Length: 363
Ligand SMILES: [Zn+2]
Image (cartoon, rainbow, N blue to C red):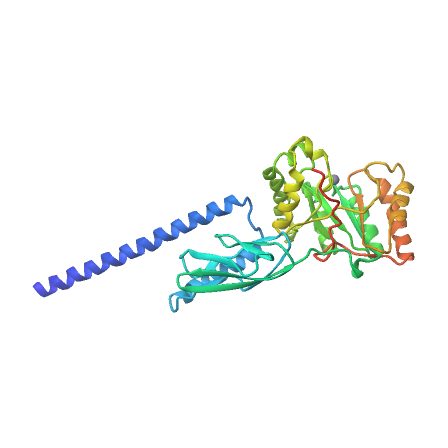
C-alpha cells in the first residue's frame, strides 16, 4: 500500500512540475506577443510587405520545430541590399535571448543600433555582426546608390498622371495608351467604389500604380509626419487589398520641392523625403510639366509644353493630370505620343530602376 501511495505522490508531483513548465512557456509567449504588438504600433503600419512577413512567419514556425531538436540561432537575412538612406531591421531567430552587441565592419557604409536596425549610409559593403549568447552571426549589407540618369534612361519618356482616377478622363487616357502600346504611371488619390475598376485596369494593363495620397489637402497631410504617413499607408493598404500590389512609388502632393507645406509645418519636407526613403519608398518629381493644372489653357498649350521640353539627353518625367474634366491633356495625348515616337523617344512606366528626378527640398 505504502509503495502505491509513494508512486501516486511522485506521479502527482511530476504532473505539477509539467503544468508549471507549460504555464511558464505560455506566459513567455503572451509576453512576446504583447511586445510584438507594441513594436508594430510604434512604427505605424510597419515595414508593410505582407507577403514578406507571411513568409517570415512560415519560416519562424519551421525554426521553432527544428529548435527542439538542435538549438538553431540565426539571422533572418544573411545578405541584404539597401539603397543609401534606407533602413532595415535584422531579426534574430531561434532564441529569446537578447543580443549582447551589434557591430558594423564599416560604419561609413552602414551603421547598426542596439536593436539591429541598420541604416545604409554610403555605397559599398559592410558586415553586420551580432553576438547572442556565445554565438556570433553576420549579415552582408550591400549599399547601392539610388538610380540616376544614365544611358538606359536617355530619350525615355515617363508619362505620369496625377490626381486620378476620374470616371470621365482616366478610361479615355487608358484607351489611348492601349491603342498606342504605351506604358505610363498613375499617382492616384483615394477612389470611390465605382472607380475601383479603373485602379484594377491600370494594373492589369501593365501601367505602374503609385501613391499621391489618400487626401490631397495640404493643411491635413503636411501637418505632421504622422499625418503624412497615415495618408500614404491608408491608400497603400487600400490599393493592396484591391490589386495585390503594394506600391512603394509615390509623388508628394505639390512635389517634394513644394513650399506650401511651410504654412502647416516648418521643415516637414526635409523630414518626409528622408523618412520615405528610409522606409524603402521612392518619390518622383518631374522635369517636364504639361501645365495642365495651371498655365495651359488649351490642349495645344499642353502639346507645346510637353514636346518643347523633351530631351534626348536624359530621361523625361512628364507631369500630367487625369482629374475629372481635364480634356486639355486628354485631347493632346495622342498627338504627344505620335510626336515622341516619330522623334525616336521611348515610353516606360516607372520601375525600381527609374531615377527620381527629385527637385530638391525647399521646406
Ligand atoms: Zn496632385
